[in-house]
Image (cartoon, rainbow, N blue to C red; front, side, top):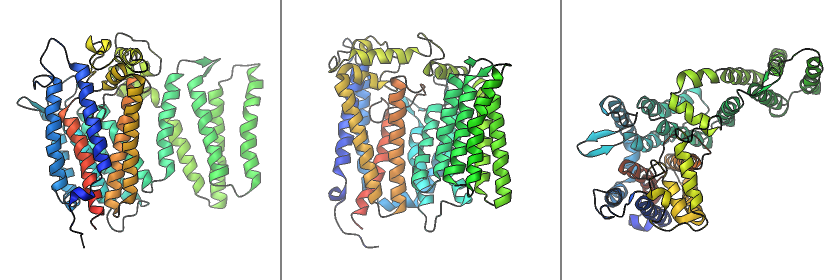
Length: 483
């Protein structure tokens, strides 16, 4: 393959590098605001967090140079080897890492601590891009789809065994990449539906309308609506009579049940479940009669959705840890625990609110200086931005991330190889997931699961992990202009 002999520094995307420098710099100032104390060491002393982070930033620029100097083909040739090595490291971490705040995810080497999970994202993105970017790859086959899931789930499972639920959930971001590369939208819809069903059933689990559990009723009605929509619109029933039967039965069931409820108690959730059963039986009849097997997929969707609904309580009570249960309850407004699980979020919201429009100024935050917000220089670093820089500063940070993610998508679409494109989308998806969950967590919109804000949160593993993730793609993009 012919390459133009031009310097990599002429082909590198300098806009993305500028964004990186701005965000890393802003992140350091935020860490200073969150952890600096006037009567302690100076900002540049390595024994303090600002000085320590400054050291990691300096070393990250060395890492950037190394990543860019390696040939872009290196990452494709050794993708599986890097992935396998990282899996071994993740497995070793389960057994070798000490218990730190309830998780075993940090390898301790002398005075240094390293979190392999932060680097596993880069390795997984490489392996997934290598596999899906192979010549003749067809996403539609069950074998290829299954292998993609295996590549994603193996590190995710290892990280779950380390009791790092937040870091493990980040791997769900890869499903956005699969969707871009041809995964059925129904799979994505099923995932979104599962989250919605879980939230609704939990939120209204104790609310009763007569003898009807409101949470179950709402979810079952949604499932019925999706079923009828899929049958009548997406898969287009051939005979209009069948459409009238489905719509008519759905429309007539509830008035009839209401009339009956005037005389005897009626559980509308069971009525809806019966309606779903009748709808599925009707679709099976049409499948056998017309040999239209698409209706079987709808039937399977109903079975899985209903099964998921009635397993929510079991999963919540038997699978999740007590602290995870409490975090979800607080996020959904089911519990008020201002001194426990809800303390972090409440103090974070107070800190952000106290910043007002323009903020209190650098090193002038009261909530952060008095250490009211736990983890305020790591997972809750955004509250420091909100307090010191105010609404304007917070919006600027969000704009920076938005520009970065959009830029990554644009560059990904320009790639000449499937390998580089898929890797680029993986980078964009991971940044988006971290941004969405972290900001949502800090302002109380999502449960507290403990994931860092890229380039802002304190930590060498986090900074290096995101740096490698980003600059490997920039190296691939520079090669695009050479070919």
